[in-house]
Image (cartoon, rainbow, N blue to C red; front, side):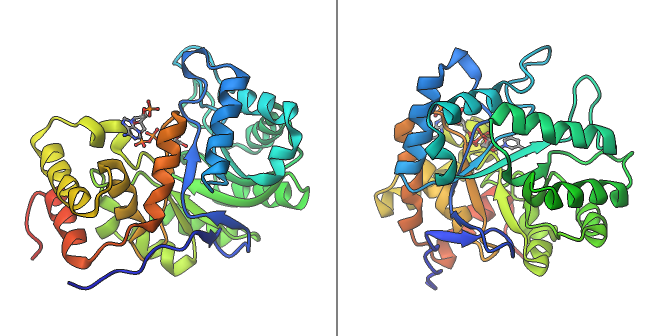
Length: 304
Ligand code: NAP
């Protein structure tokens, strides 16, 4: 059994020098169910109290297919305007570039307006990380890069990241950027393992990008998946969790934390106790035998 290193409590966001917690909290589901600003503030406090200072949102969070665009950002904006000191305690990440009903829009005019609109809703002068949510294949990366570099120069965004980009799209955008990318945000979990073997994480290590893992519990499926594959992965996570005296979700987060690319899992729970519990994943150490056992269960076949 070869032990893997414990994850550090904090990491640098790419090469920016901005220090972030090694686990993030996401607000995709924040505006669901008519949550009040006081309830949202309680969740922000729960994250910060647990040492999770890296907060991820997006302009589209809250959109239900017909309305709600901007609602999650606006709710966080209410929290920040009621308690302005919170802003300095967090590293705030948001995303844009999807404007319903158009699938994706990264034209210069739209990107500029999207960044300004996010800042207005969040009631802040600047975000620490601004990410393109999904690639617009009709946007030239040189034009996108110019708009984002200008936004950095104007002090509206401190750093630039992407989400759901292919490796070629990352390379092309990074080529044109003056302020190089600091992060990438693919879906990664014990149920979504593509990037371990398709080169995405290798590229992140090569370029010094911080990988943020969206849906680290498979959107909740790790808590209760029912396909044969889900069950096989859950069985391996449960075996390791029982041996370590931790919960299945903590096993799932810490499995990601053990990867050498420095993956930051984004906790998606909107329950204070679950956010705090998730932060305990930082103290869980894996060994190669257990780590590969989970990977093999997810692959559904042995390694060669
Ligand atoms: P997740 O952690 O995979 O799933 C969270 C869901 O699982 C919540 O509904 C949660 O419910 C549920 N859950 C059930 N049992 C749980 C347990 N024991 N512990 C924790 N959660 C449990 O994450 P996600 O919400 O799908 O995504 C996380 C974040 O990733 C988002 O907030 C967002 O920031 C980001 N994201 C990004 C993209 C992108 O395209 N870039 C896409 C999706 C998500 P409760 O709230 O009731 O605990």
